[in-house]
Image 1 (cartoon, one colour):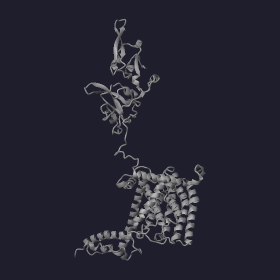
Image 2: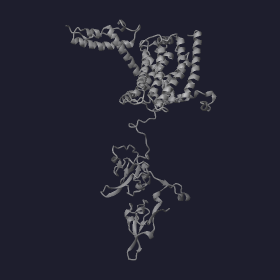
Image 3: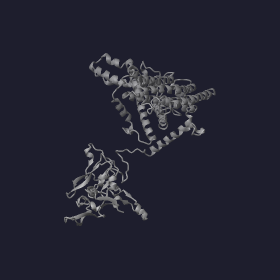
Length: 245
Length: 387
């Protein structure tokens, strides 16, 4: 019965199976005594973490547009846009993060078109109350944010590869743009009001039967970050996100 | 009435001059106990004498008979305390060595982590004392008390040196072996009394373990006894000093005895009766809190005895070759015990637990023939006149 397991050893060395683990443990003992064991004495010493470590999300307040991409991309819906006063006293929209719900995936930082959201190396997040886990936009600020913490989600476009350009990773907000179906537009200007980068201007394209101007949105592709706010806001679904490359 | 100085009452007398001295040779723990009693009893006698000068109680407290009784009580306390400290140090050694062998840090409480066992003891002491409703209460408590009691007793029976013993008798080693073998029987009783399937299986395994290693162990004892011609521990140690450590002629016996000793103290490669991966906590399942803590302590006491037996039988006891008996032979003995215990810990770190059928195979098909071969070697050496 037991010999079933012994068959894989050569007959000569049967029964010497106890010697190898004994030798290994002895070797390990001398090694970990001469050097140090792998244990890290955590509260007193900390493990090294890379700069792009997925800690809690951080926010650079002045860079943020308030576009809301992070809110929509968050898998656990822990981000919420709240109105806060910026440095000059104007009320602006900025993300607020519920760290208790955050799963530290870093999508908000990856999708941020202006790198206002970053990952941070901060992972000691315990608090005494649940309320304290909600980080308001000012508290999301992280001292020592560097460019390694700006993580991007980029892809090599098939169109670029077809052209022979192999070293041009492109972010999604450079490829997607809202496009207008002019026949549906009712000239309500909601898209222009909601655009965080003021990329949309209303231009007069004609006059209707009553003599009023028909205004259609004109999108400045250089300013647009394809945040889809206009698409969501449009009451008649006249705007659609399309790949423009 | 002149003032009666305390120094008139505390006189450190020579224990050998005590008319009721129970030993024929000098005994260090008795000496310590007697001196402790002279301090304590002398102080009490002096105080009573201050209040009631010239009373009979004071003189009674420091007379030979009373001093002898209290010296024996204090001597037992001293012997137990030293055994206890050795035990705590062994637990500490096990934790440290095991930690290094597993490439991690071990205990960190106190100097070098030494106070971890005290913290553990305190923790188990704080727990509620509970017994299962349907357990056989009488045996449940008595088996527990006897397992711990027998373990501590056999640990106290081990002499640390020629001057550190409870009794110096002709059958010393045999009595230690006899008491040592009692524990598995009591474990079986405890396993039955708890009315729990895991405990019962654990108890049965303890009995099974015993029948597989006890016989080779006694055969090896026979080898040592044949070489010495005496069961007396003092004689065995002195014979090893005069000739050579028995590990050299009986190296085979040493290895086999080491394996048997690990099994006897129910430590990891052979801890079938505990087997925390299969049976919840083996035969100790229903013993919670301080009961479990004391069982653990008892286990380590038996581990200490197993190491001490290896040292006495094969490693020359408290004697060193060429030096003989050092000024503190007790420390030499304890150092050797720790060295043997290191091997126990090493085996624990390296080897997995054997199965129930494997332990029978090992005991009867490997250890037993090797023990007989060892006995044959001893007989050949004895007949050849080498020893």
